[in-house]
Image 1 (spheres, rainbow, N blue to C red):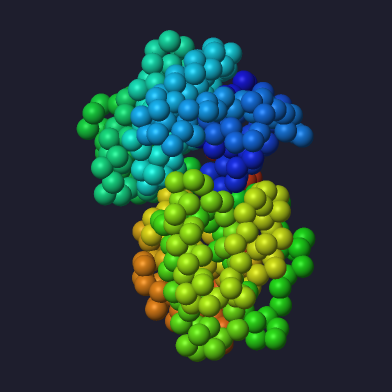
Image 2: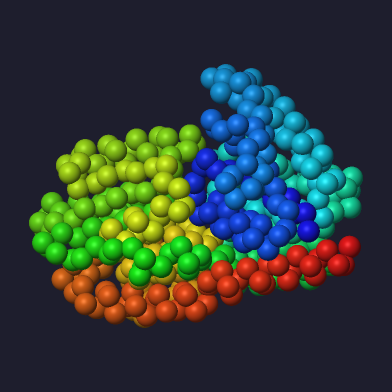
Length: 400
């Protein structure tokens, strides 16, 4: 089978959605399938390249107008860029047996407005009319009050042959909507998978809780919705008010829409005098992530919104205690006190309480980490999830 993947950002960029697609296509290549990935954000990478495992990656040609400081010229550049990307996708769709689109949730699209750096749904619908190719759309989002959420899900159900929801809430919402509009699209609930062969704690030396230094890892792209500022405020209370010895690594990319937020985080670090305690790291490839999990004591994700937090699952697979905000998606997959520690969304004081508890009770944290590791490896490993996606491929292709 020849499968064409579309994702807004791909290598050389990094992120949870990118890592999921990379893991999936590598498994397909091992099966003997032909796979190609089309990505819009080119960066400094060549327009076309082959990864070591033979994966062909096509990247949209970046027009210089898009970098213009003048808004009208920049938006004209974006429109032209989308037009060129659309024609490239149309060309490669004609050669493929299946098109698998990985689309972000509305919370990731909002910083890209007014015109956006993504292929609009209307273009996908037109490609579908021009090329009779089966289309599967994986929606990497969670039901929210965003005005774009219902609108985007509605548009997807009108053109896609199958919608993959990565969490139960989106699945139920999409099922109700599909019934309302009489959509013929199949709706499936398949969570993202964790590469348990890569994220294996027995393969990497783990950090020991010695010298009363607690090492925290926050693996997420720098973005307001990821809540890094909440963790910094909690660290201020623990380090400056209570005198705990803590080191924190923020591991994630900084994209241009969030540059001002990143600068605000740096300002908070200076204001709280945490330069010795806080470190920002970016540009870490997926295969290097286990080293960072292993070299820290626990993982914190203080997000304000999440669709499917793959880094939390990876951390659990690496037998690391996790502290996360009490979002619906976390409560859907995990039991508080059994698989992880939770705190109220946006509350740095309660987060500080959880971190202080772990600081003084490492044995309890290790017990929870062990239970979480067994749970994740049993339910979300690639051996459990990838076959479901492949079965869906054949099912959708056979219907067309």
